[in-house]
Image (cartoon, rainbow over all chains, first blue to last red; front, side, top):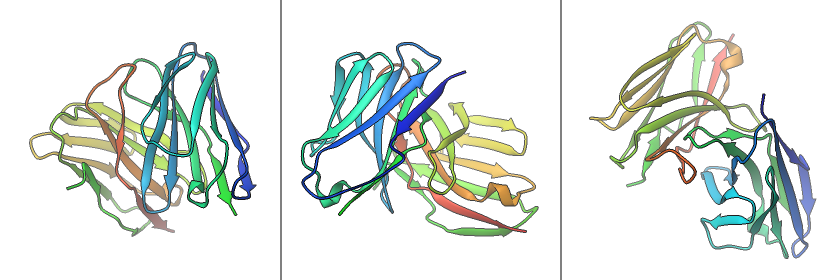
Length: 111
Length: 113
């Protein structure tokens, strides 16, 4: 069966510091991978998605970037965090279908 | 008009009640529909998914899609305290590698023992 991991689970970072969140998927190959941010009262916002190694599509221009260095690894980064980057970051995967499966999430607080 | 509208809630029901959760949408291209359940401080869990109009049943849960009215529903029978969570509807116009989901904002359900 497939499993998706995210770490860290929680993170408190000062404004201006860098960020690296990691997501890995087990039990499948060549998954489609997604990064979402969930903010209170604003629903789930798609940030990036990837259909293969090195292939990244950005949905929202912002302070964040994503990379996919390996088939089942997806990384979300920032060089300098803003207060507005606080939120619950979710990684998801799918096969070539429409259902997406989410990881446990990373709660980021920028202070 | 937002693409997907979901009753904001919150919703509180007694144990054993039948719960109806609803979403409306404006994009007639949507043809794949999903319901996710999200417990507090956890990632969303795919509960039901269905293609096009019709009903799909899984245990105490029934997903219903009415494309002519652009309306989807999730029914929970014999609701339990363990059903207390936030429920998100999601939909997509296509499937495959580039399919993107559009989500409702979610409704928080509380089932009272």
